[in-house]
Image (cartoon, rainbow, N blue to C red):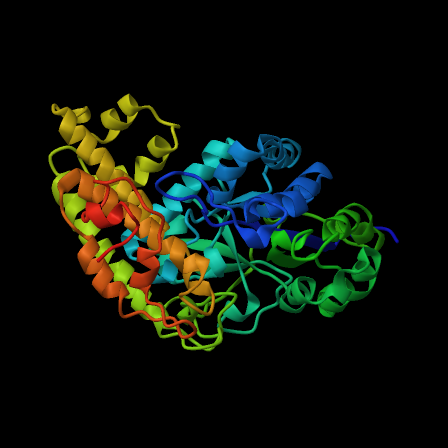
Length: 487
């Protein structure tokens, strides 16, 4: 069958892994469930990132490449990393627009974040993208597609043109075969692509749907076209959005399904394979939509899955608001100390935090950082003041990591994901202690103690005590911290 010039298909992949490194050592502990690989980053690389990169699938899809995954992959498997970056460059050279999207930096659920944290997460995500891909991002993927109007407004302010949402995040009936405009305060707007819900769900969870790429293209795709548009020969786009790890990790050999669909199956069934940026270049939104806010793609209760708790996960979810409260209380103290203790060294502490990622990652020199953000356009007179400021900036970095969404996604606090978020919080506590001798640990432990596992009875404080030991002096209670115990 010849391609129908009016029928377009975009496969979207969300490629992300949370940071697994111990925040004190930078090393990933062995993860026995990943055997025979040392950890899940290695396992998923072997099963998904590498095969999809080597057969060229990244070149033909729209995708986001999560910053924490990108940072690890750049060091651990630079050849795979380079192929993913190259896929975007090839699209940019060929079509004038890349096919990569940025991602909010720490996979934070932005509707639950403060305005200041929303801005930092978005700016860090855009900075990371621009450094890695060599050009500004036109689109941004929001963690769990969790959205509110303030988040979209900040995206638009920073020049982001579009994002991707689930169809049920629209507050009114929509036709998911076209992009929509969302009006924002101040006369701004942003474009939203709604992915096809039944198709994306089928690809994600029904193995039968992805058994044969030709059958998928000829049987499944046509069912989801707008027939009235087809009769009028109007252009329409089907977006299938899934976790990128689906292709080879969650479903073995689906990297080959994707390859055949992109290269032969779709075109044989009359579909032109495209990317979101390419489609938007020639198809500006013609209609406006209002959204359910806050909302997300994996929670039927707004964003309660990561906040107040809901029945999207089994068991007693009461630990979720308690863990979040503990982190929020810690964040307030971290912010108060940061603002107060850097008042004499930074021109604007929060602007410096927004610009800190480049310095932290080594993309900006110490001289350039202090020239841009230091008071009086330079370094502090005192070396100790400079070191104190940099420790508190690092504490802010880990204070952002402690909100990684995975810590709240699953059913119980007694899992590795909440454990990791607590570990990031401990690193922020340590850096603040080293810089100021202010003990934030005691209050944090008291807050954690009220969050209980419904399966094991362990508390968040118990999880804190189980973290690996650190060198004496790095935490307020150094005698107990040295052996990994906190009284």
